[in-house]
Image 1 (tube, rainbow, N blue to C red):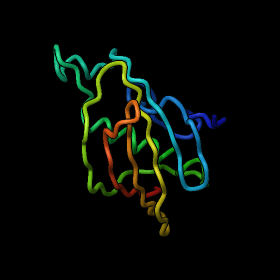
Image 2: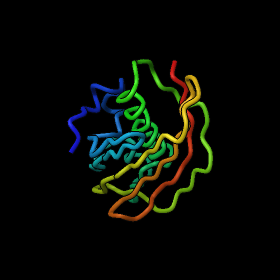
Image 3: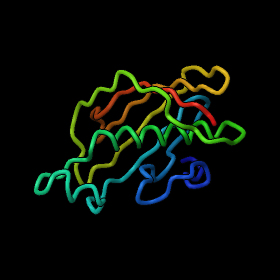
Length: 136
C-alpha cells in the first residue's frame, strides 16, 4: 500500500475526482483505484435504468492517475492532456465496480510526458489507452 495521498498530488476534487487511492507507485509506474458507487451525478442521465460510466470519464480517471504519477516524481506544475491515441473500450463500467488503473510513463521529453495505461474491473480489461500530458 502506498502512503501517497491523491489529494496531495492533484488539484481535482469531488465531484470530478476519479481516483480514490494509490495502491502502488514504483519507478515509472503507478496503480490507482476508484470505487464507482452509483451515486455519481452522471448516472442520472447515462443512462436512466441502465447506468453505465461514460467512456470520457474512464479516460479522465486514467489521466488523473497519470497526473498522480507526474506529481509524485516531479517538482510541481499542472499536467494537462495534450494528446490521446489508441483508446479502446472493452467492457462497460457499472455502479459497484472498482476501477483499477495502471499507468506507465514511457518517455519524458522536456515538459511532455508520454504514457500508456489500462483500466480493469475484477481483472477484466475495460480501457487501454495512450496519452501525452504537458506540464504547465
